[in-house]
Length: 449
Image (cartoon, rainbow, N blue to C red; front, side):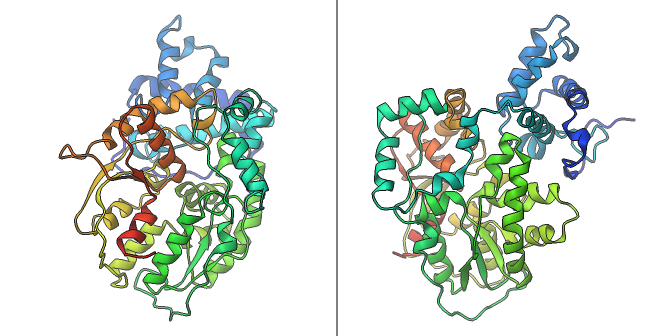
């Protein structure tokens, strides 16, 4: 007898992406129809993203009022709205495995996206937008950076980018850093390695494209926090994009290329007993979940998975080991903080919130809802306004603390999501609190310069 829903935590099956049937459109559409029929009968996910309202409208407006009345070609409208946040799977769906209905909405969307990519139906502009290492190759080059940043932020250039590259002229875009994080990172002091019961006593930093090329200050603040806590660190010897932007396109061959470049390097640090830290939740999730599901039998991949930490996950477990300094001389006042989707689905709990709440005379207003940015989704002309609409409840909830006062700071572990939220504040006239990454807030609270 079928159960109403899961009574157990959801589990993930490996992604069978090397099986030729994975790219079989007919069998994929059969699975899409099966899943859509279950979703149509439940509708619990209607508020998460555009995929579900799109699906339900298609069903309700069909001749039968059921999924069988929806044209198969219209399935792509649902697929295109999915930006792989994973929240439906991890927080909403009652029919994920081990339930017998075995419903995996995001990975079925990924399968469809992979078919679309293989068919050559992904625009060149989208491929370029997802090529973060290519963009970052200009970072740190004198004059070139200044010219690139100036051009990127002029209205004339943005209008051209909108018409040629499909980047919405009103969407916030990051600037290139004048010095890459990896080039300017301070060397660690020769502190003794103090392993805890649950935490390695030394750290290897996977910079991420965004921190390395766009906001190196986030990385520098992480290093200052580690130094303050006398935790020796190194930067991994070399790195490539984690592959998340390519995953969102369904470009699994490029994800494989990133894996082949990164895993041998990271595996060495895992073998040497380092905790590997990544300051961007999407990158951390790639190594904790998506790449391990693509390579379930690769021992190096699985070792990196076990060694990979979110920074605040590491710091808070470090505290439980009795090895974290908890004196914060600088108060922060009111902080509105958003937990990003790719942080939530790591199943690590509210570790950033835990640390921020340790700071004296500081009030935290935590929001658990998608900001709408969703990687490249939120900057595309086709979806930017929708991304702002998805994020509007977050903007409004963050604009006022529980006691009715206004926040001094707004913050999110996802740097891009944080800027999207700041833009949402501006567009909706919600005030102009200071945007700071949580690592920056902790560095400030420690009184570090």
